[in-house]
Length: 248
Image 1 (cartoon, rainbow, N blue to C red):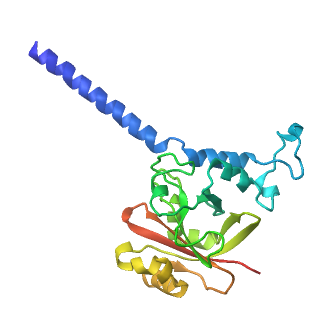
Image 2: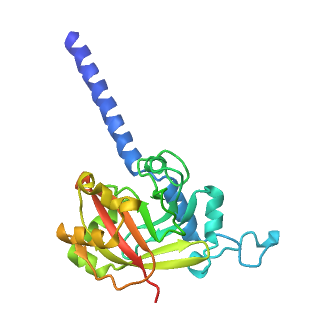
Image 3: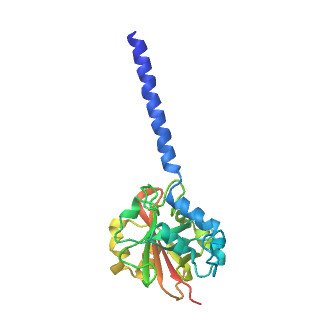
């Protein structure tokens, strides 16, 4: 009788462990608010320009046919913190960008403000997505392939050579950037290099090169963008990506 009780107890414990494992897997890969907003953008949103009648409520503007990025106004109705969109052609990176008054909320919340291990792509609150001449953007590099995961691929020289640009969509305009450098750094050792007041593009490029990263010549242009994300092989290491706006 005792052995039988022990047997059933063991089965129950194993069952609980199995169900908990399934939940953890589901939670890791389940869609979140980021996916919802990406779907809205891809489907095309916003009324056709000049259409203000109720009969036109189902008329949509596809973002690629919307040079003023008016779809961003519709996204802001979902969350006023949405300030733009970032895309890296040749990767799966295609996400809304949010901005708030701190650097921790969107580490644990998606673009719609729901708790999510994916977080969201967000701007350093000490810089401004639209007006700063040196903007800083953060996002997790998730092992499930989400967010800035694909930046890890740029550490391969062949991939770095084939992927050169980043696209930022802002209200009223679109900016194209040239990727100047990518590498891996210890954030504790180089923390001051990536703070807004210590953010010097030349120093970042030289540091990336000295640490074995990949760089391109900075031939001039507009403002700079610095992306910082996680290295999927070691969460204690960061990947900085420096890019500069193409103005020609």
